[in-house]
Amino acid sequence: MTDGSQFIDIILFAMVALFLGLRLRSVLGRRTGHEQPPADVHFRGQPPVVPPAADNVVDIANRRPAPAIAETPLDAGLREVAQADPNFTPEGFLQGATAAFEMIVAAFAKDDLATLRPLLSDEVFGNFSKAIEGRKQAGETCQSELVKIVTAEINEARLDKRMAEITVRFVSQQVIVIKDKEDRVIEGDPSRAVQIIDLWSFARDTRTTNPNWLLVATRSLDE
Image (cartoon, rainbow, N blue to C red; front, side, top):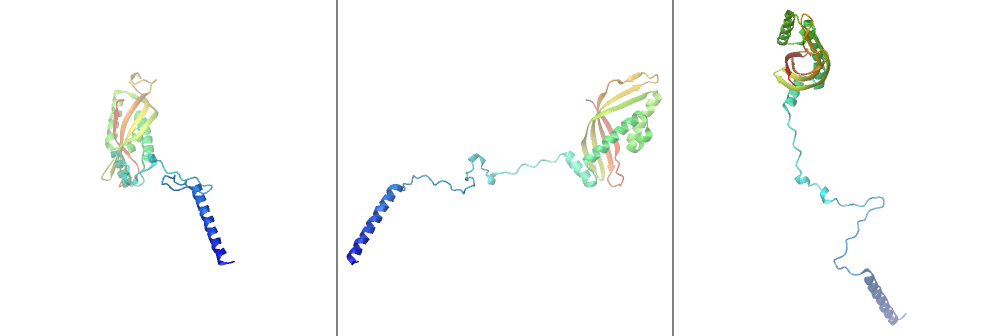
């Protein structure tokens, strides 16, 4: 092939390339700056990435920690008692206090001082003894039936040095009847239970190995 024919071939190839370039440009168009962004690409089997809505965006920098819940005096008292007595739990204490309530109410109605003695402090035992002696001197008898304990809740707790004291609020239904020496009802109704609210305080020296709590104060509330 001569040099002249090679030159002609080059010109033809250039013209074909120019023609193809113009065709592609007419098909693909020009970039004007207003084109839509390309669609997100995701692999098959994977969900497309969706940008979070504006309402769901949490500004971590401006988020403040939730305020701490203040400790109540009751919580503080129970915590101090538990620190002084590692075996103490509110649940276990309430179980024992409820059992003591039932025993003391029944023993007081029966004038059973022997049962009351190990459950009461000296002061409370003295008050119970005087009440029982007063009934005997008046010729009165007490008939009491604890129908049920409605609720038993710890109302107060404190630690004074090593002496723990916890007050329980008992709500109970009882049938209480007082009769005179002629067996006549002078107080109460034997056919009707009444609701009674009591505040009983129990105490224990946490320095001793004796796990028993003593009843140190009683108070009844009006409904």
